[in-house]
Length: 353
Length: 268
Image (cartoon, rainbow over all chains, first blue to last red; front, side, top):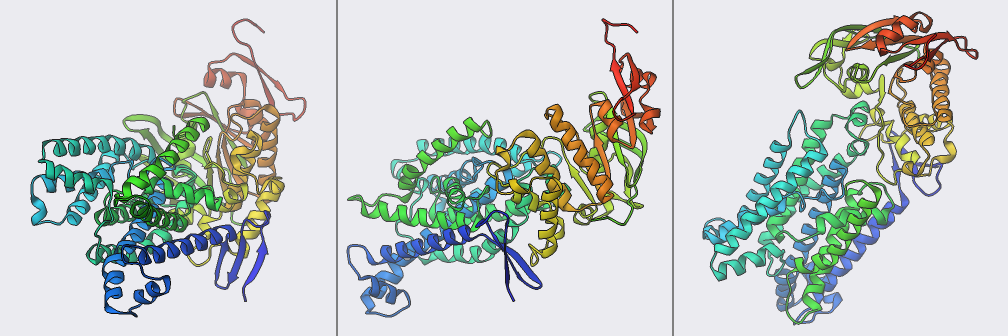
């Protein structure tokens, strides 16, 4: 039998037991996650039904599960659905990855797009375009390699008798600028058509995404998302600082390495599929945290916020303007004010500013 | 709640260093079980370093710290966390974290993937909130509390952890006098009511004399004197440990030694 007991703060959480299982439920967090998932689903359905060839909402839903005339099936299953699915997966991966890094370093500014990981992918992909490797190696593989090399560099250079969150941020920001400079140099010395292709990728773009981008990402996430959510429990002590966490029995270096591997994997495959879509990894966890009223970025809600953020931005990019804009421009426009607000807030609190 | 097993915490031949700088060398120490021990000494004498080593936060270069005859580094850290708690100096909670959430984290070493919030966890957390007198603050954010309340919340987390040994690094730092006494009274209760072994680093000698059963005085990484406060805190020892001339009289309230510093402008 499940039993419920009220906590001292009414509404904060319930205790739920189903021996030998027990845990705590936070009604507000559950509500937020459900609402985010429902909103994302509706936006995906809308994205699939909207376009030059209008399809009704019901037709779109039926086509998703394979019912309908061949023309509708083609448009929905091969053109619109993969793009929406890539948007959901990339957004989820970025949001979850951002939550992991922000929790691990106890700093809202330590998201993977701030500490050089996505910039590493950018340098690798642009090098591939400028040097003409893209015929033999896909941009997806280059993006993956760039992220992994950058993450390894950050970890190795930040290592000094174990790593601390603060060192990871400082080293990451340093490497981020080096990667950005290298990318700028490559764009400058490339031909005009190459520079154009490079800039298109660097903004973060879902135009023309098909199942070949969605599948590798989906397979990786099937492994990494459960791993990240499971590790989330161990991060609750890390939030209190390394000394307290060790005192509470957390194997700090092991947990941090496991989080790093999971977070890097998520952001690497996400970037490979959608490009470095700006601000999602930084802003989604912070928005989720404020929606859920928690003191840390809640991993699942952060992923769902990221998914909604990217799908919504892509829809806005494709529908609000007469031309199809890259999604990264819209997320930047929405994300920049959030970043500014965070910076001002961090300065006022005297932490992380 | 009484903690039955009497823990034996001791260290032998301890050398502690940060990088190349040796802070403590060839130190032997034995913590009296079931008592309150205070480590005192001037700044940079190695007292916090010793406490960190006793809590396995700092691995000794030589020698070993042992709990019940087993070297700390050979005990899995989670298992150790069920027997020995540490409250470091000036810990910082994430902005907005509630007192209840903080105290709940004290239960981590007792929790597993499938058992994240058992009856025992709940009663330990409620017990800790009650023992530290902050049950009515459970829903408040830790960073919004006063210094004294905040320190109580952190101590409550350590209490909820339910360890027979509790180490505290300068638990009264940054608190005004009333809150210092408040926190020390609370620590006294934890020892007398629950039988926990307490080791704490303290700056104030008079408070150490009043609240500790056993005082360890350190200078330059060595133990200069240890034992009953009345034997350790003498004018000669204070002169040696702190380079401070003083008179030691009797605390009119507690009957323990009371240090009256003299300084350059006064003579006896």
